[in-house]
Length: 625
Figure 1 (cartoon, rainbow, N blue to C red):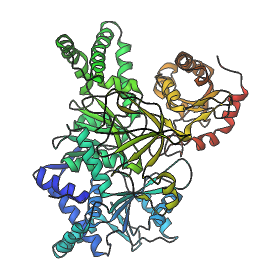
Figure 2: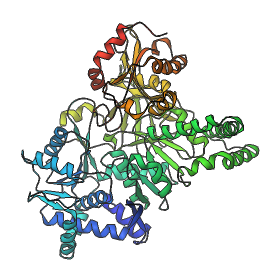
Figure 3: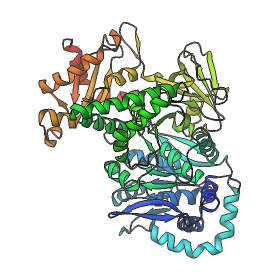
Figure 4: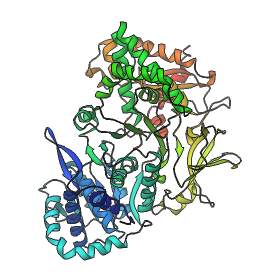
């Protein structure tokens, strides 16, 4: 079957790669996981397609989604892909103003709503005037609005309509081309109003094909665990669309808080993750192993030392010899298998993205023989640009450039292109100096919706997309240094990229989050969120301590305890990169608080403005040695 659209990927998975009765989706109902076959999913997709066509939606119309991950998200999205409609996803935790802006900017005619709370918000926005013609809910609602319709009714009506509309629906599907828009994904950004990134079927399809080329071990027998939001481009590509391309099964986690339990229930083989989850697993294992003491700790350290030897050889493309292989088998039996069982026992690989992963975390999992494939991309690149290969990982890098893409490093000052790298030009020994990362390829967005000027700001005349990230090539792989706009210039003229500094201090298990300040200042300071679990254990604090109104922790004993690690880790940095003072924030930075973007990047201007008084006090105080 020729694939001209993302729905063709699904049809190929359902009726060519697999038997239609095979499991496509798993989701938790009460205390057990239920299964949905490809055939059942296809029937629901056809029913929703029929309903949307009957109410008058035509190719190019926008359908907004404001719901959590669920089978219904995929049914509705595939129905849109089948008819050439455009999915305008809205993150459920956005403010009312942001939701209103996206609805009006996209001109969505239909919205699919996941909860009664969100429905009330949508009805309030709609009362001010929108283009909405229908509001489809995943639940039965008592709201009196004539626009509101329950998905159960949509499916019932759609099933009745499908036989009579079959021919028209097939015509609509055949009219969809790779160049047609599949979605508008609004970037949260750190400043300004959201921008709708226009991504086509071809953008996503090219990335699925490229991902399978670099990570060829993924196949129809894999089970993906999905817990990152489908309204974001990362999960959409790395789990959902990639799964439909290769014919895999997707199992939905109940939520971020139940991942440990759901992993044991689902026993996934592949998972897309963010670094923070992996860091928590790392911290928990390290703490348990090192607290045991005696022979258990010695065996643990010995086992990981063997894994590290294999990892170092792996970076240079060398396989372990006989004796090391023997030691690795023993290490696996004594240590690694016990840890891997906590990850379901079948995990073959984890893709990490959305934010930078600390190299020591990736090294830990690699030594455990569960490779973390850290990658790089942006919403505007749909998102895949590069990824560490399954056969070779170099932690601290984001891997090999994807197939059919060009990646350039440009001097930010002279605008001279330092190098251009492709998948085919890969050289495991190639290195170069840093500069801004530019990208060309079939994955690059069509532009920003209704914002031609903003599009021209990031797309130059030669067709290069300017990522705004600073990076270089190391051992043939791309390495990210930081964002251009994040660069701090201290009062002495020293350029400082905060990410490497923050990564250094994040090695401490006491540090959960850290935010560096220092632009146009004489020295660096930081806002640190200390580990809640570590504080509870060390100082006997209860949950009530972290729910106190005071934003910051002023306990000198806790401050001195964190300072111990800060002082030690400072020795790994140049003098101008060392923090001289810090405050301890009681609660983490979150998306809900408006301090994090959807991709878990700190909104620097928001944080600096919100905590300006506390920041100024750090510069009035005497240095901490």
